[in-house]
Amino acid sequence: MLWTDDPARDAERYQVEMENEYRGHKTCDHCGVIFHAGDRYYLINNEELCPECMEDEYGKAVNDETYDERGW
Image (cartoon, rainbow, N blue to C red; front, top):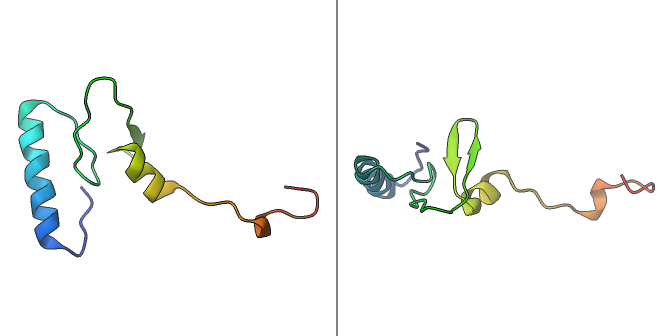
């Protein structure tokens, strides 16, 4: 579980994760959202992430300075 600088939020997320684990639900390791049947999640570095957290954590924007005159 990822810890932030907000202990109250961390405790709340931890509580939700523990309740969901008890019930057998999978949750996002970053935000605690519950995965439902048919949902997609990402397993990266042994962490289960929802699409939003995956984008926030690993998504990068491409800018024009990235490419040289050949386009790569």
